[in-house]
Length: 286
Length: 354
Image (cartoon, rainbow over all chains, first blue to last red; front, side, top):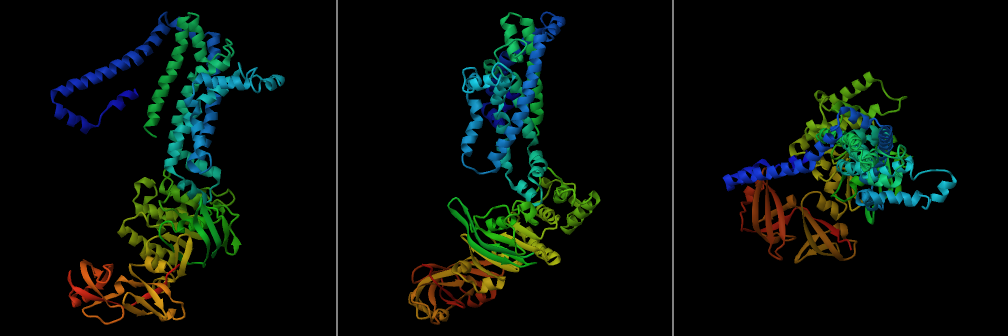
């Protein structure tokens, strides 16, 4: 519930306001709070409850049957595999990009910063289409890939590529300001003391960025598991083969299999809730 | 370890941080690089450490080119301006860092590391702080831990970037005396950067005065203070009054006054500068010829053992600053508004750089 903390005014400001406006301000305050809570309830809490209500509406056994459907299990595995590849990749790319941007001066640095934000700026559907354009049967590399019998689009590599692309900015965006603020003096000190580049990274840089890094990884993971648009374009929706959990939910929903759809949806909802809890814990330490 | 710097040039974009700088630092010496900000002193220090690559020129350690050796292999201890202590490590681990990252062959055992770190913490008189984190220390304590950390790897050279820059006046004074004593004890070749002339003159064996990427003068504190080689050195070391005039056959004319400049008797006539240090300005109630210019006392400030006066020259209204001892001031008894004559005890004439 990050909203509530954003709405808190500084103590002093409130006190001054109360003193000036007397009894009326209390009413305004209550109205504002009620408005915020009402809004949150309507748009966040009620849908959350609805997911679980719908999933468990026909009893626990049909809920369990819903999530143990072979296609759903395959989708869960595929989602875990995709996130399991995309997140470590972005961990490495993110650190490398943030390191380069924060610790070195070079030509084209602003272009690199802009490029890192690109996946945030374009619609996920377009992100997916980019890969179809590149690797699809009619795409730039389509012929070559076909000749060598390599399948990217409508297969696992395409899903991983699209997911990695969409989640790329999270780690880098989190680390760049942190590393810029910390500067390069500690690294230089380690270097002069005889540490190698790798030792400097492991013993000095990494401990200094670990909470920011964890934060970026959590957000990146949440997005990787929940990504719909880009993956939908490249996956081809081959049931039980290339459907990730969000795609599987859509398929079940379109088939009017609401219990199974919402049962699967609860899994993603749990992921979101766990992410939020970890995020809060990590945020306190960043 | 002696260090020889030969023809160093370093550019940042189109800005020359160092321009053909050469310098010899003898073994066991404590040298100060003194200059205003932007004079290139920190860049010179970082090039010696291997933290910057020069565009031209070389650095020799004991006659051997250090250019090919990265910073980690140069055997230098570097103390950063803002200490750069590892914030996530305790004081103990900070000091131990240089020992722990050594390759396994040369790395000392845990007991030896412990003994060495404790010895260094005792040396900097902070052995009771081993378990603390840098954020829990005062500025002066951090400074000393940074020094202990740099010394842990037994460097051949100790380089310090503005070592007292971020400290308050009292701690500064204590620490610079302490650094001098420490150097006298361990005799390691040391170079420190400072913009504070008092610091350089008090602590260093030799002072290197830098300005705009070049070395203006190298010498003992007495040499650079008493016999400044250039107008810049003269004006940078201590407060001075500057007079513009013309040099004619070994005499300098300033307005309607004249002053002897025998050292320039061979020089061609031309524009010249005359410098008089504030404390070498004496005042007299009556003219005694030479540079005796009439002036009006505008302001009198008593600062501890000295009295500072601001005077306006009658001729052109330019401000002259004089620093008298308390005794001399009482003797003269000048107060604001008095008319007096300026009589410099010592004038230094330079040809005006064209």
